[in-house]
Length: 157
View: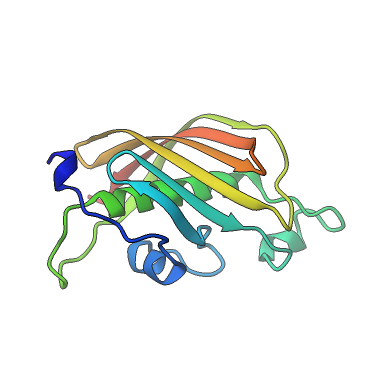
């Protein structure tokens, strides 16, 4: 498949469309909107972080911080959205494949994510081979990098 064969995507992609592509639901859906996408190459998405997130009750009382593992999960979900938005059109009744996070490399956390932050998730697809996608991911708040990782996702076999 060439880049010209990839689907055009109407932006922004809202949470209703995101739920049609990802199996995650409350409290584990960690992407609110897709802002930009270049199918097969790049995606930029948004996660609004609010004090209403259930994990803030215990992480940490009096000093709420979004767990780093959930920032990684948000980047993985954004990677999954890039994969779904890059797929060739399917028949309406054809099931969409589900991709699972299988590997995280080079994870790095530079700053805390707290209630009120807007987490900007940027994903670059490095390669797709045998239904496995490798992604370079980065999360920023107000233009400052807060986390980055290389993520490998694979289609459920």
